Length: 258
Ligand code: ADP
Image 1 (cartoon, helix red, strand yellow):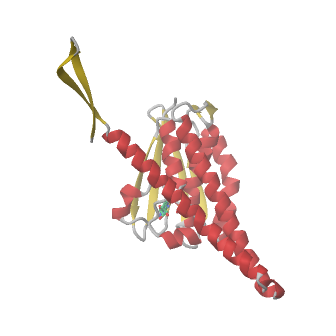
Image 2: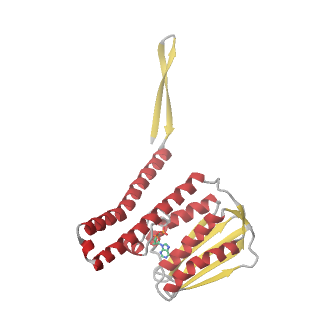
Image 3: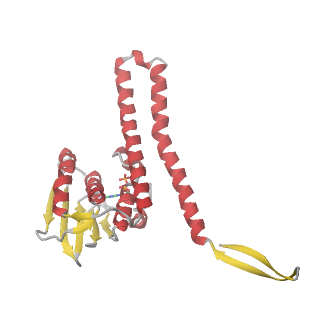
C-alpha cells in the first residue's frame, strides 16, 4: 500500500507541474493491524473471566448465598477466575514492557547455573503433583553472559511450566544447557502431547493455542511463548522448536554472551 502526497510546482504563480511523493506504508499498515488485533484479543480474553465472575456474584446476591454448599462452589469458581485475570494482566504487562524496552534492556553478568537453582524450586512442586521428573543436564563450565536476569528467569519458567503442563502424568522433562558460540544453548525437552506440524509456525503468536479448552483448563493465558520470544529477541537470542504429536516437544534457545 502506498500513501501519495501531491505537491504543485509553482512558477510565477502558475502551476507548471506536480510532484508526487509515494511512500510505502505497507509496514505501518501491518503494525496498525497487529496492534488493533491485539487490543481486540486482550479485550476478549479479559472479558471472559470478568463475565463469569459477574455472573456468579449476581447469582450469589440473588439468593444462592443461602445455600452454604452452593455458595462455596461459586466462590471457588470466582477465585479461579480472579487468578486467571491476574495472570493475564501480569502477562500483558510483561509483554508490553519487554516490547517498550526492545533492545534497551538492562543487563548484568548472569550465571545460568544460579538461575536454574532459583527457578527449580518454583517448578518442581508442580511436576511432583503429576509425578513428572524434572532432570537437569547443565554443563559445568557455562560462560557468564550479559543478560537481564528477570527476563531469563521468565523464559525458563515459561518453557518448563509448559513442558510440565502439556505432559501427562509420569512423564519426564529434561533441562539442558551447553556453551555454544561464546553464548549458551539451552533446551527444554518433554515427553508430552506434542504439537501438530500445522501449528508450529504460530506457537509464538500472542494468544495462539493449539487447543484453547485444554490451555484454559490448565490455567494458560496464551501469552507464555510470546513473552519467551520477545525476551529472547531483546537479548539478540533465538528459539526453535521440534515436536512430534504424542511423543513430546523440545524447545531450544540460544543466547549470545552479550
Ligand atoms: P498457554 O498459556 O496456552 O500455555 P503459551 O504461549 O505458553 O500459552 O503456548 C501456546 C500454545 O503452545 C499452548 O496453548 C500449547 O497448545 C502449545 N504448547 C506450548 N508448549 C508446549 C509443550 N511443551 N508441549 C505441547 N504443546 C505446547
